[in-house]
Amino acid sequence: MTTLVLARHAKSDWGSPALGDHDRPLNGRGMCDAPVMAARLTARLADAGVRLDALLSSTALRAKTTAGFFGAALGLELELDEGLYGASARTLLAAATARGVASVMIVAHDPGMTVLASTLSVDGIAHMPTCAVATFTWDADDWDVATATDPDHWSFDSPGTPAR
Image (cartoon, rainbow, N blue to C red):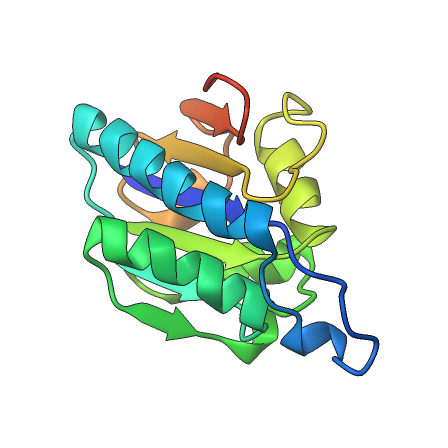
């Protein structure tokens, strides 16, 4: 089985104009949502018998912080990838497949996250709000085979809404 988990970073703070986009921290809501969503994903994956092999994150502070919560909950070491900052859907998927393992989670940004989630869900996911998590699984054990077809299963979860 091949698994891809996409998580958009949690809500960030637009506070100081002196901070560049890359250095924006999570705000209070983001700091609350990230651990909740990490716990929900961990439970869902455990129920499905899925163990993630890799956790990739954009180098932006808000993504790294969000990914840190997921890494702690999942028992995964965080791998930072500069190429995920502002990445396109194609780049996000390529990063997952290039990792060479069966199950990958990526924490990154819009619009790439929404475009990829929408594409893989055949327009079932219209938008990835902050801290939303979309999980896609294929019965195939090869990324090339898996990504050439629609996922066999997908789910979507976001703060304040029940998982679908």
